[in-house]
Length: 90
Image (tube, rainbow, N blue to C red; front, top):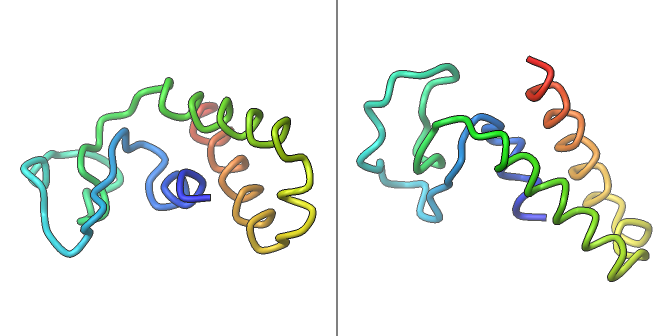
């Protein structure tokens, strides 16, 4: 679920900062949306979003009950998939 939450934080970022209380060396990068402390590096890479979708598929096939038993996780994941598709279209 961490990867889904990362997509929701910033779908254009390709790396995230575990300790989001500190800025990274990329904090001055000029981009839209603006960099936040949660983002380590903000360059957009389609493969980062594709990795989220591929991981989702793997999780589903390894444990198809995961999303049926944890409704909050399902809603978070659905929001992340929706944002992923919107970002790719944009």
